[in-house]
Image (cartoon, rainbow, N blue to C red; front, side, top):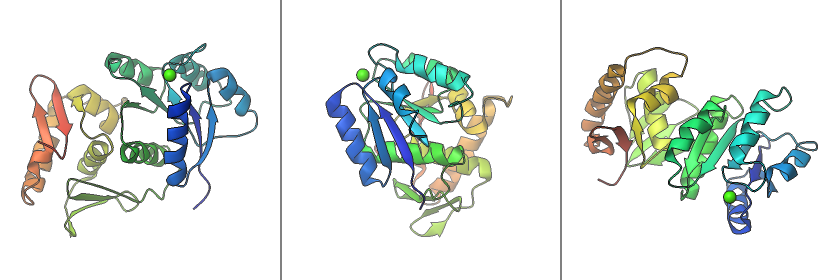
Length: 230
Ligand code: CA
């Protein structure tokens, strides 16, 4: 597997070290910076495949730095995952508006972080060997775009596959229909929100054959959540 370089920008030393350790264990090569200024200097020497960027940084904030990178020619193509704290939920959407490729909310598990990074790298074509994601008995083969439960392959459409992949890499959080449309169908498409319900219904029907339909939970008045705890 080719070397995958991740630039971690995080001002809190303990978190920075924890992220470095988790990513190194997942076979990423990690470069770390404590703020955007230091990260800018690092970019003169390395070209990361992905930037994991803390939202709250002293000096230039993570979101502002992301905006600058994405606007420029030199680094605009590097995928960025913004790290936000709880209570900044609405900011996350703004993070995507400045061009960040995804966001992850603290606290998150190492498994969730690594799955998220791989999903973004794969989506942006940087990383084809995504390996497998397993959750709630569902096994997703990212490389082959296959889903199985207990070794039995599920007959899902490409859209349903993408929906499942999104859910498995974003577990335990509620997403509105609009957010799911943006993330799974893409922001440039104009599809009715009802379409999301149609695909969720189909997906649940398929999962129900394996008694796994409760993994996709309806959160009344807001949207859907994927969780392996009821
Ligand atoms: Ca911080």
